[in-house]
Image (cartoon, rainbow, N blue to C red; front, side, top):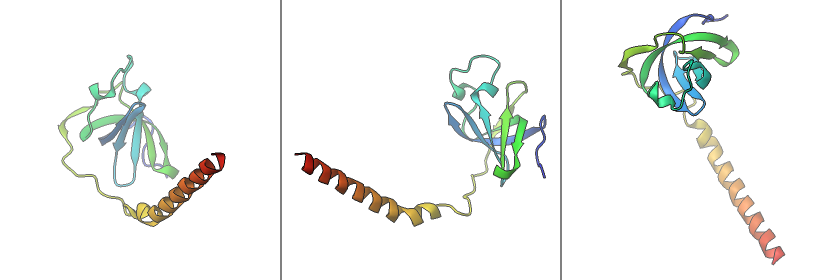
Length: 126
């Protein structure tokens, strides 16, 4: 069942900015992306000129991807400013750093083996 419909205007908090767009936290389960092409009808030189991390904004839903709990968003044809900062901290996910805890030793071991293999290859060449 879809939670967001195309054309809905929803509120969220900017949680990340990349060269290609803006990440927005919508609720406990959903996050959204405003692709750089959906920020303005004009050329966007610097996304930071439009939004800042921690800022609460409004966005228009373009498409929901329910299986991934993601929403494609746009701010180019709406008044997106809310005029207040989000004072709520971002909640840590249930998994938190558990992936890092589980995989760190494996990644370290693999990297050591790779370095040792490369060193052996260098010695063979010389």
